[in-house]
Length: 330
Image 1: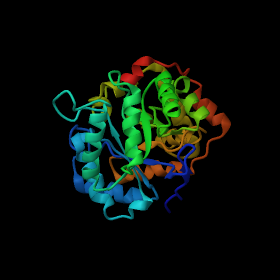
Image 2 (image 1 turned 90 degrees about the vertical axis):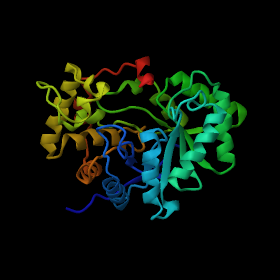
Image 3 (image 1 turned 45 degrees about the vertical axis):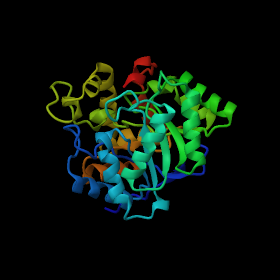
């Protein structure tokens, strides 16, 4: 079977062209038992992703305390840097001490140098704040990010996982002070985690902000590998409390609908779930995090899965999206 033809889109209202899938690189490390823990295998997955046409790679400084960034950097040195869109993040703790985390000017300017060094590149295409910092004025954070854009170390800036009022405040302050504006948002968004439809997604649609969803398969729940009548013995649900919390009657009803549509189409539940995201007008590039080349190829093949309006309604029917402030604490 031939590889699906990769599709591309611009990130929000920018002119930056990204693949319709973004390769999430959190698995490339050894910090958690569910991570790959094998650099050669990680290299092979990245190489295959680029071969499939994925030009968008997302990592963060905190993923295995820089190990993920280093692995990505080792691979991309073999490719045309101008053809790749490399994204990373700042906010989380990178060591002991009061200035080793957050979004202060000091922490941002210190951490961007570490990320550049580990990635082996002169610039970062997309630099994102990983969370909202309650202790640092957003004006200070935006000023620091604007400085990075002005000096050429960063091309675009983005944000992830926050309340709509916080994101709106940041956009307002950028416009007010003529700072570089956030061009994209990374929300948790999938068929069983749809709370962002009542939070930040309407802001993104209104403001021309690109949407790059993380956890598009609900921590593996939407792959169909778990069973409602048994305790998970492997996969993220066996060790990750948030993944296990998805085991609710409402979510099992969503998965039943996913499985039905998948059976009718002769595809996998994961492909149906990803196809649903690709059909959402506000979504630019879901972040997939495969742990094997087989999973990567299965995910990318979702590009060839078309869903009718009726099928999308069936998939959405079991859920009534409600925003919970607790989601921002993940």
